[in-house]
Image 1 (cartoon, helix red, strand yellow):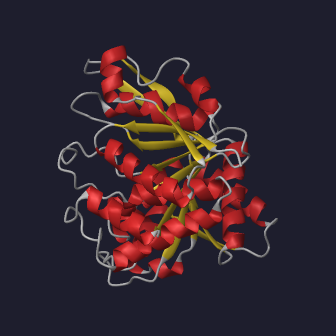
Image 2 (cartoon, helix red, strand yellow; image 1 turned 90 degrees about the horizontal axis):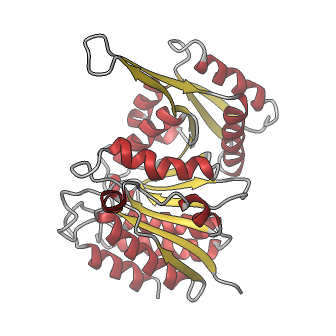
Length: 344
C-alpha cells in the first residue's frame, strides 16, 4: 500500500522533541507507511525571513495527506499575535479545518486535580470563525482616544456545520450533546447559535441536547464532569473549555487535538496543545504523551484505527506503570522509550 505523506512542522521549543517522539511511535505502529517531509517554519524562521511560513506555504502543504504540528510560539522572540496569525490560524482557515477535536479523560495511573475521575469528554470547538475571525481594527493608535474593535463573525453555514459534526459524534458515543453559548448576555450571536442548534437537533431525534452557558458548563466540568460527553462550542468558548478539560485530565502534557476537515477536501492537522514551553525546552522533560496521542488521532483519521488503538493501548500501559504521570519527573526520552516498548 502507498505510504501516507505527512508534513511535519516541529516549530519551536519542546515542539521539536515531542514531534520526534510522536513520529517514532507512529512509525513503529505503522511501519513503512509514513513518508514525512519536515518544514522549519517557526519563530526562528520568522526572525530569518520576516514571515512564519513562505508565501507558498499553504499550497506546499495542500498535497499532503495530513499535517503534524509540534508547537509554535516564543514570546520573547516573536509576539504570539504574530506567530499565531502567521502560521496556525492561516492553515486552519485555508484548509477548512473547522472542527477542532480534543478528548479529555484520565489515562490509567494519572491523578487529576478532581476527586472524581470517571469522565470521558469530547470537546468540539468551531475552528475557523467566531471570536477568532480576525475582523476588527484599531484607530487613534497610541493616543488617549485609541479605540480597539474585535468583531466576532458567526455564519449560518459555519455554525450549522460544526453543530452537525457534534451531533454525528454524539450519535457514535452516548447520544448526548451539550451546546455552549452565553445567550443571556450576547443576544445576537449566541441567540443565533441556540436557534441553529434547535433547528439541527430536529434531524437527530436520537441525540439528547442540553444547552449551557459557558460559565455554567465550566462549573459542571469541575463539579460533575461524568455528566458530560460531547460538548460543542464556539471558537473562544471552546478554547477556554478545552484548557479546563486539559487541567482536569492531569495537565497540558496529556492534551491532544485534531484540526479536522470533515469533508476531506484538504489535509487535516494534528497537534498537542501545550505550546512550546520555552522555560523547559532545554531540560528534556517535556511530556510527549499529548503529542503521541495526537499522532494516534492522525492515524485514525487516515483510516488506520488498529494502529491508533495500539498506540493508545501502549500509552495506557505506560502510564499504568507510573511513567509519564507526574509533570517534569520523567525524561522525554524515557517516556517515549516506554511507549515504544509497550508497542512490542
